Image (cartoon, rainbow, N blue to C red; front, top):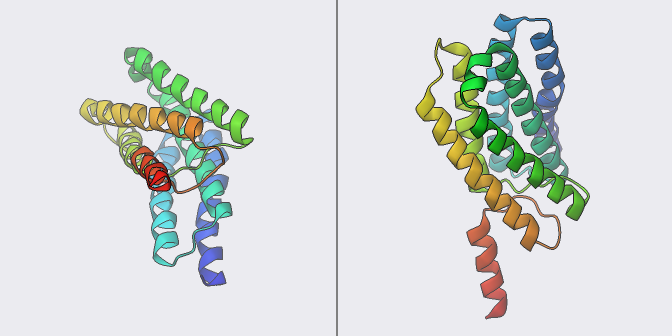
Length: 194
């Protein structure tokens, strides 16, 4: 791993950390136009830093940790934007949104209680959920009407991801990063028994 690639990749992630409070600021001053154009940049940098980290073998515990926090802050800023700018969408889907938020909060609290920090599993389901969430959250601001098929697809994959992460927190005794998923963790357990 080259130091320069490590710093560049983490700088991209740190951009997302810094952009999230600015996105929230834009929401509260009502600057919808700038918000809707800067949000996709934050989501795009999430794709870029992960791709570059794998390509240049620059993964680290620090990078995984700040990437998870930056991901969460980007999603939170997008969700706050939906609550403020797309209130009618929230009102018509409140039950599903409460389920998603409840699972997310439970998973976060469970990880913090067990590991004294948030989880950073980066499972395949989490990556799939992040792509669908990001795509939906970008398009809800770009288009006149939400794409409900995309919303329900993202919600189902996110629910499956959060349930998987809750189970992973329960069965993994120590904090880990870059866990592929429950299937692979179970395979490791079977291999240890053999």
